[in-house]
Length: 174
Image 1 (cartoon, rainbow, N blue to C red):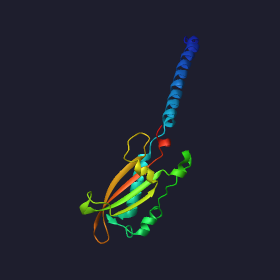
Image 2 (cartoon, helix red, strand yellow; image 1 turned 120 degrees about the horizontal axis):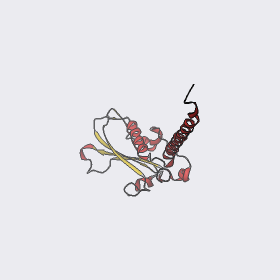
Image 3 (tube, rainbow, N blue to C red; image 1 turned 135 degrees about the vertical axis):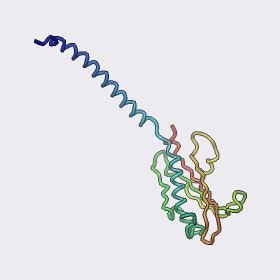
């Protein structure tokens, strides 16, 4: 004889209430995580600008020395091709016409930097982004400025200022 046989239906009802409560908590957590992940886009322009600067620094120098031919006019004229830089973007918001990347290299004499003017300048991309670098505001392009110290083949030291600017404000800032 089992004296607990009559209470089985009552305990099943209590367990089913807890089961539905746990189910709703898990479903709510999943909905929250998905909305947090897909709700707002992440602003990755800072990372893009850093990668562009790093790739450029690796293209023009190796182990603290300026690569051969970097100060030539031929390198300046074919800079994006020589460094394997691709400034093409998707055609969202009409970006193909206006360009969303800008990169500028200024070479200075190490001994007279920062007072001296640039000895040699190389630039590629949309120059309008460079003009917006000094402006403040949420809808402005992200600009990153880095300096690099290198030695030329003849042992002459240079300071190279790399300025990279990334637009894409329509996609990254909402």
